[in-house]
Amino acid sequence: MISKPAKVIALEEEIVYAKSCLQPQDTGHINTAIYWMDKRVRELKRELEEQHGTKV
Image 1 (cartoon, rainbow, N blue to C red):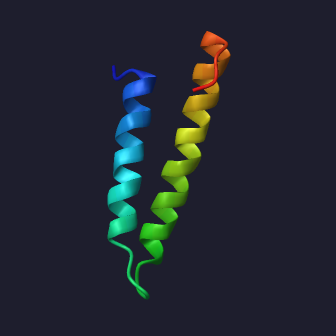
Image 2: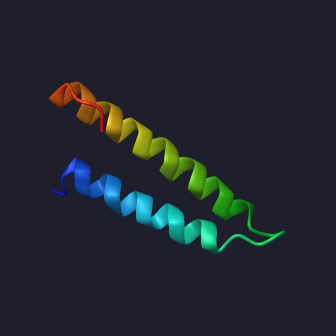
């Protein structure tokens, strides 16, 4: 199983890559993926904060 901090790092790296792939048109699916990954990062960080009582 992958740790939550490792998931956060991996997702943040994928967000950077996905943003580099954006074009003026025909990349709405990439925007959707970025939104979803960003939401997941926020969820994981919130879970880590609750577990450890510190801000990530």
